[in-house]
Length: 352
Length: 191
Image (cartoon, rainbow over all chains, first blue to last red; front, side, top):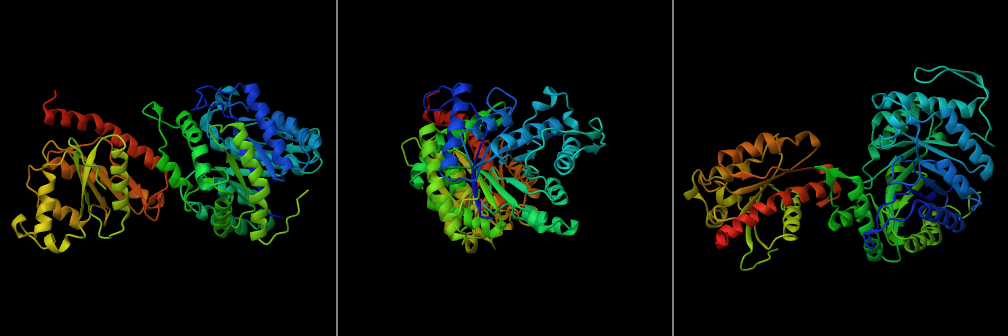
C-alpha cells in the first residue's frame, strides 16, 4: 500500500485575526466541501472532518458533511477525525458510516477517539466520569458490528443486542482507526483489537511519540495480532506554501488565533508567540509547516522513526483563508505526495 | 545580546550549568528575548562554568578571582535576576549553590528574581518550589510567582519545542513587567 497523505479539518469558526470576522457556518461548510473536491482532484488520499458540539466549530455531524463531499469526489477516502465514540451510539455510528460507504462507493472510514472536549457527554446524557469505560466498551461493539451480521452483544453501559439487524450494511467492513492522543492504555487497546492507530501529535519533537509506536507494535506482537493490521497514522497540524517563510507568515496569525480560542490559563487565552511557532515548525518540531521539500523531509524523518503508513495534516488550523488553503492543497497533491512516494521507492500510482 | 538605553533595565542571568551549550543557557536566553519584546533591557550573562577556576575553591568572597568578583558584584545593582540551574541529583547544581553562598546576605533583598530550571524529566518540576524558592527566600528576594521548569523532552537540542513552555514564559514575564516598570519609575523619581 503506497504511503498516504491527507487532510483533516475541525471546521473551526475562529474569527479572522485580519478582519476580525468569522465566516458563517454555511460558508465554512461550503469551503470544506470545496477543499475536499480539490484534494480529490490532486490525488490526496484522505479528507477527514472532526466532531465538536459547540458554537466555535461547524461540524458536529461528520457523516452528513462527508456525504456531501462524497457527491463531489471520486477517489478520496472520507473519514472522521475523530468520531467521539464515547458519547455516541456505535449502532448509529455504524449506520451513518455504512450509508456514507454506500453513497461514496466504498470510501467511508472512521477514526474513533475519546475526543478532547467534554460538551458531548452532558448533551447526550453520558457520565463524563465513565469516559474511559464508555470508549472501551463502544469501540469493541463498533468493531463487532463490522465483523458480524446480525449482531448479538452484551455490555454494561448500553442495552444488549440480540440478533440485531444493523442496516444498511456497507459495501465492505468499514476501516476503523483508533485515535490516540498520548494515553498508553489507548495504544495497547488498539493493538489488542487489531486496529490501526492514528496518533494525534500536536507538539513536541517530531519523533517524540516513538515509544508509543514501539509499545503498539510490541503489544500487537504479544496479543498475536497480524502485523499487517497494525498500521500507524500521524495526525498533526501544518501548512504548506511555496517557500518556508511564506508558509510560516501566512499560517501563523491564524494558528495563534485558534490557540487563543482553545487554550486557556487564568481564565483567558494564552498567546502562542511567533518564536514558539517557528520552533515547532523547525526540522525537529512536530508541526508540518513549510515548503513542500521541508514537509517531505520531515515526513521522511518521522517515517524512519515510526515506519507509519499515512499522515493527515490539519491544514491551516484557525482558518487560513480559502485561497491560500487551496494553494496548499494543490502543493500537497502535486509536489509533496509524489515526492514522498518517490523517496520511499513507491510507484506513483493512485490507490483506487 | 543587550538592548542598552538610558532607562534600560539591568537584567542579570545566572546559569548554573556545567556545559557551555546548555539547555539552561538556551532557556535563559529565551526568557530574556521574551522580556526584551516588552521592555528595554540590558543583559549581563553569568556563566558559572566559565568562572569555575575563579570561585569553585573559594571559601570566602575575598578568595575569588576578578571575573568571579565582578559577577558577584553585578547582582546587587540588578533590576532583575534570572536564576537558572539544571537539576543535579535532585537539586540545583553545586556550582550554583556555591556561587550564591559567596554572595552577601542582603545583596538580593527585595530584588525581583525569576526562577528557572531544566531537568531530565517532569519528575523534577518541583525543584523550583522545593529547592530554588527557599534559597531565594533566605536572601529575602521577591521571587516571581511563576517559575519556569522545562524537561529535556521539551527541547530539540537547545531549541524549546513545546509551545506550553513558551506560553508559561509569557505568563512569567507578563507578571514581572508591572513590577519592573514600577522599579524604573522609582529609580527615575517619576512616581
